[in-house]
Image (cartoon, rainbow, N blue to C red):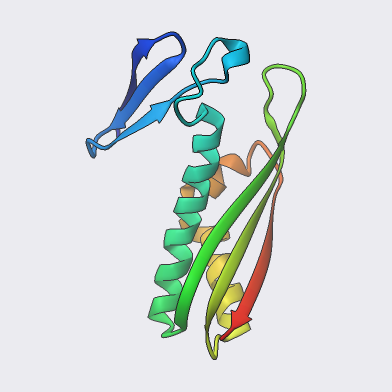
Length: 138
């Protein structure tokens, strides 16, 4: 797997990887940026959310759960001093559906956390990660 960023000027970059898709990266004006893209640390969180979301929804589909809505929200605390690393991460799974089995949802999250999601496996070595599950029966 390969990825790169290409400088566009000031603190603006375009990121790309093997798939060929692109993502804009930028910085706040107060540090010399143009506020024109994701902050690099935001992409860690988006990657983590996407990694575990794909696991969980795949497992729930295999368990024949009738999911009608699904969102994964990630909140991270950071230090105030540089290098401004994450100090705590909370992943919240918000799942809506018909007759959802809470045990099936819990198990899907657990399998993502302990077996399938490389994002969680890597980040959990550096920062505590906790989970919250919200189920809406519709």
